[in-house]
Length: 431
Image: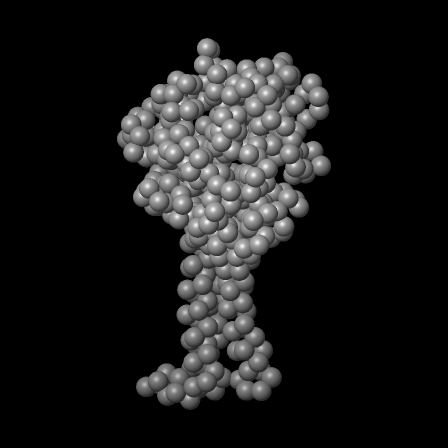
């Protein structure tokens, strides 16, 4: 990183959504302790819990949250990325904010990935255990697994050694300190090192045992790894894990992303192999490319020949050219329109009237404004993400959108002025 510190097996990274399996583990520990019932409604543990539809909210169970079948929309779960709340009530406040969120479908009807499912679970763990979520994870998971380079909060000593995270800025990695909120710790902001994660993987592959330290029964671990709901024809979601493959070749995995870190976690239980990859770089524009290393490592460990990845890396040059072209098109349009106006001024002509005015002024006005207006609607819709989160994960894309908006708005106002007050324009032009 910029500070010159080398990354080692003990260097902590933000895990992103691989944190969810820790939260699922915490829930299952409390299930085995008789403190949580998987089929009980959330309101049994959080009586005040509700979404916009209060009646529908009472139908959401703990199991629904674990399987991502609560009906909470993906969009709602991505609002917390820009939060930087470190207060003790941050997690509860985030869950209470769901009172304004409309469910996308009834609970139990189908799968929809939403980070907030696991933040609610984190609050249930906190409420039932009588400890903060962070303290519970430290004492019930990190301690018995001897994960001494892991952290459940930025205030933990291990977090002081956190690797420097990076984001893409027009395909150039730039160091970036992302917001970190206790509101989203259970779903995506636990911190751990590669070495510590091998302890975690070992327990997952050995029936909940790490050395002589049990963290869960073998049956409990099997429950976590059991498919609960179909995601795609080839994969299912369990409890904080994605499960795919056939008997004898099962893959249990999860990826994690925040704006400046990425993680991959893969279990091959039939081969007793676990793989952890931590990357201090966000995945904007690299998407599937960051999954290639874990595919290669798995192939090598399983004695297979390396083949071309099914997740080929994106080619950055065409994407960069596309971004630049998007920026240049309105600039060229403005230059062309400026030359057209210059001709009016030189000839002392009034701007066109009638049909010509429509084609030369009104239609271009729509062309100026419409595309960038749609961008503010379509980009969040495409990624199921608030624009503020788009700005966090892809600041260069956001910069392009804002720049185009400013150029288009400025030129649209100028064009409108020319249309409405052409004689005033010519008077000043000849002065």
